Length: 265
Image (cartoon, rainbow, N blue to C red; front, side):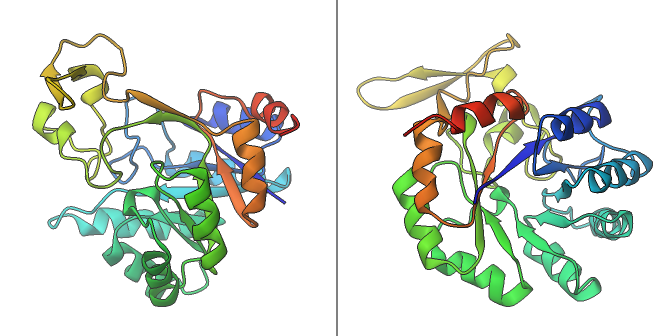
C-alpha cells in the first residue's frame, strides 16, 4: 500500500495537510539546515514540537528535513538541529550529509533515518551503503529517474523508496548544484536557498547545446524547463514497486492528488 507524504512550510500548512489526509508531512527548521530556507517559511523549535504533537494525535507522522550540507566552521548548528528534532519527537530525520548521518546514527541509534534526495542516491549500491553503514530505513530517489528505473531500484533494494510525483525538475542534480552559488552567491546545498528560478533563464543554444543567460527576477521558473507529472496513470504504475512512498510539493494539495491517484490506470 502506498503512502502520501506532503510538505508543510508553516504550522497552518501542516494542519491543512493533516486535514486533507496526508499519511506523513515533511518540514524543517527555519534556518540553513533546511533546503527550503526562505523568509516566512518553516518552523521554530516550539512550532515543530506542537506540530508533531498535533500530527500524532491525528495519526500522521512528521519527517524533519535537515538536508543541507554543514559548513566546516558550523557543524554544531546541524548537530543541534538533529538533537532538537529527536527531542521534539520526530518520526524520522531526512539527512543528506554522510557526516551528519553518522552523527545521528551514533548519537541517536533508535532514531529512524531517511536519505534525502539531496544525497543523490540513484542506484542499489549507493542505497545499500546508507542502509548498511547508518541503518537508513528509506531513501528519497532523485527526481531524474524514470518510472521503470524506480521500479527496478525498488525491487533490488531492501530499503524503502520514496519518490516525487509532481513538481519542477531542475536541470541540476540534487545536492550537486553550483548554479545558484555562481549566479547569486547563495547555495541550496549549504544554505537552503535555491535562487536560479528568479535569476537565471534557460534558453536553447546553437544546435543541441543549451545555454544559460542572466535574467532579472521575473518570478518565472526558468531553471526548471521540465516538470514531473507522475500522477494518475504514472502513480498507478508505481504500484508495481512495493513499499514506495509518494512525495508531492506544496503546490498540489493532498486531497486533489488522492483523487488523481484513484483514477484507473
